[in-house]
Length: 132
Image (cartoon, helix red, strand yellow):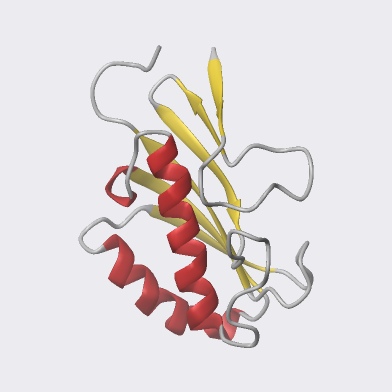
């Protein structure tokens, strides 16, 4: 049993997916793009600004499922240029603080939205009893 999550404040999905899916106590957050609530790219050419927007969007998706960044256990980071990893990592430290989720980094040559430099998806686990 699972519940589809639509987060207030995020732009409409660009294809057939949910912002997140809650399955038991596990929250699967779709890859978050550096777009504002109207779907416009934020931080063109600036991987740090884009990473901040991605993580702000992730916070909205997590909150809609009853989770926070502290509940994240795994992230997958997609970068247009793996040399941006140190800059992205500094932003991740700001947002995740003491939490150090398992992580995979993948360099890709093209994103769904032109101008994107980073996309991050996540898995979180809610504390307590399974959601109903």
